[in-house]
Amino acid sequence: MKRLLFIFLLGLLYINGNAQEQETLSNQSVIDMKELGFSDDVIITKINSSDCLFDTSINSLKILKEKGISNEIIIAIMEVNKKDKENKQEQDNAISGIFYKEDGKLKKIYPTTFSGTKMNTLGTAFSYGIASTKIRSTMPRSTSQNIVKSTQPEFYFLFNSSNIDASLSNWWFSVASSPSQFVLVKLTPKRNSRELETGKVNIYAGTEMGVSEDASIKFKSSAINDSEFKVTPESVLEPGEYCFFYQGSIPMGGYTNQAVFDFSIPSNAYSPAKYRVGNVVWVNIDNKIKQCTITEVHIRNNNVLYKGETNYSFKTIAWKESDCSFDKEELKANKFQIDGIDCQVVKKYGNGMVICTSKELTPDQIRQVKNTQNLSGRIMFNLEDNYEKGDAYAGIDEGFIILYKNNEFIKL
Image 1 (cartoon, rainbow, N blue to C red):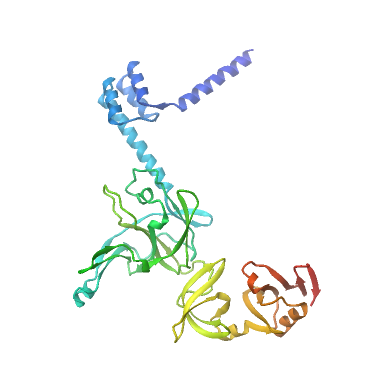
Image 2: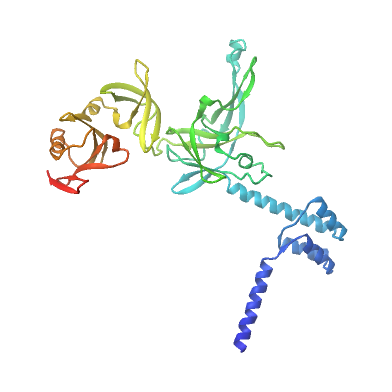
């Protein structure tokens, strides 16, 4: 009996302790304490040491005053409310903004404020006002402190549009609701700074602010939910300096759009592409080998695609990575025929390669490929249309021809 009574008392203490922990002071709590005769010092101490949910609207403050609550207590209530609001804003700022993914973790990109603005009026002067004067905003340091180690990064935009009272330090993500209100731009590095063209001035056309469409880099945006978006650039980003710049409406009340969300891609960043913008390569187009300068690099369904200009004719063409090489003779050797069937080496790796064929090869034709091309290691054979899916119909490994459809092993 005594044991049961002891357990019962412990239970009451636990419930009472929980009730005290969960207690939240309100306007009515303060009025109740005043009516019970507690002094102002006791009430203020209780306010500063408790969870609070006060209403500080004019009507509520009027009621407190009518109930005999002193100015000192009312000031304490308002100060606690202000601190709670600031803490909430800090929490909102921490979970809203632009993030990039690295090693499976999200890292936040904090804004970098412009250090100045400059205009070059020389061209305008020489053209008697016909040419526009470019407005360039500058940022400190020649490289960003946000280092992104991939040329095909993933960004995450987290918005907090429910927070109407946007903080001055992170207001973009309370005002904006979509990544489409931002532009991705490559910055111009200088000796000790970076520059972004943010507008232009013309005597006749007036002032035009913002980043031009030609200077912006296209990106894809997919909604995870109403406030979170995944953003990936449409093209591979070459090593250099970049930023996201807000181009939406700016709210009233001291807000200025004098910052960018900058990041740097170093020269040793991972790239799924073998070649880069500016490289001159040999390209096999319609069985004709031409020299081209790469102008764009894209990833489509895990396949690397290039765009570029043919040398001398300057015609723009597009091609797959398997259709180009620095070495003209290597490119020639990568394409051959077996009994009229087109074959192409599309990928080489440590101890093997992948060959695409226009038709399925027979075991005898697979032997011909190995012998005539003097190949070694593990070889996978795919149909041209199935290469991107990774579906091989045959292979050579450990001295056997393997037919995957029937799981058949034939000795070479």
